[in-house]
Length: 137
Image (tube, rainbow, N blue to C red):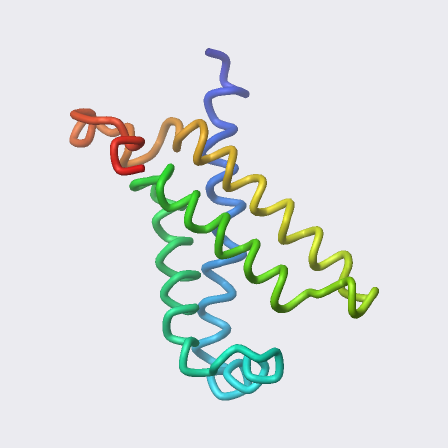
């Protein structure tokens, strides 16, 4: 395995996780505004703590590479739901780019779900080599 192939997975995990970690922190700092935005799209603001937990928790778990395949599958679903509920390009053409970015991010998560965390991850550390991450799926 060459260095390019070897380090692509951990770099990809960093890049895909950052958007969720930063978004989760932003939602905490702008809590009431975010809850209002959610409600304006028909999503109860009471779900905001779950959204923050999903973004921060999922982002951090992908970043460190723990239970990557399962978490990536869940994050792909979350990202697709976000695209559908918050970026309905069929009702507002200005939302098409945001919708497609979410779909592309979901595609990246599906690659992680299929291929695992790669090197520099808890999933592939010596402490966790006893079983496959796919056992949980």
